[in-house]
Image (tube, rainbow, N blue to C red; front, side):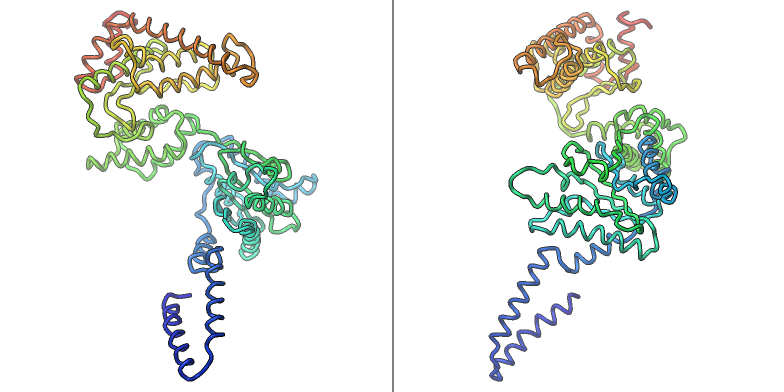
Length: 500
């Protein structure tokens, strides 16, 4: 209802009632009827009924998404290939009938946030020339019983109606954050979420009651372990596709996609950026390119340079620089702490230190940035012990030079504990092959303490042996607040501790 129409009605009704009362008409029944109509309208609005906003929202959602192809999605070659093969069942439906193959009903995309699950669902719609209808799990959560189930029914009905209207044989329904409504059902009290899930299961069972239009449900989650088993079984979600963080080749592809509309300096080396951004998701890589462009614009430059990209990687990884001013003594302690990490990193993996900095970023007062190493998917006991020693080296350096630790080591200790736990689960400790649930907490704590004490002692010994590197590097770092990896390695060579 337009706003001016409401204003006319609101103004006209009281005048009409006063007039009727003036001429002697009993207006009490009319007033009661108006109150009842108003209450009914209010309930309809609260339940998400036909309001101007809701109608506009449905109209907005029905607008087709921009065409997106699999080639425009960087990385994820394995996941894209697996998804394309599953989608071929929709395209080659006559052929699969000859083999008696049951069409797929659902595809579940799982993986960390920002890896491109939504983009892959849009590309799936383009690949199959299908109608694309999207919703989020949170849209089905209502305080009123039955509303979520009703919206599930409307979602599938909308997909069928649009496919018939647009003369398309296929429709793709995408539900993001499906763990919100697809969580494991518990015994006892019936929840509104359970009714919504039951309706979703019913709709998926009835997807192929007619040949056309063919409907495929694609859902995304980063918490697959929370989903109900009835939803995960074959015949509901027939394919579970893992969408992982991209490897170096994938990161390179993603960076090049986001660099197309940005003025890059000819000397920019995107391979180096792909190496530096190890462990980044597609969303983080897009942010790297965006932040680099912002840095270049701040300096009134016409092109994005390599240093802008390196600064952007630091910002996405660690956060923006802060204006916190440290005292000279605090700055020196931070320098000692970070040099501890740097010295051990260079001993464990020569050439791994890219720079040591004292500039505060995010919650960190300083940081060591490492050169990209070869990507690893399997870890040996020696490798994990080396990484634990690097994590403990900051606190060890403080103990050597200050006689005690500070709160700056809390995150380092958390990393070390996680790696020790990985060693225990992998059978790389004196406990051997075992289940964490079968061992008492006291035994686990004793083994954990033994490993950390041994590695901490080895770390302190190595740092004391390289005291000369500390003395020279500390002076430069306190003066310049930044020490490049090449300068740092010069200290090793000057001390004849590493070969030139």
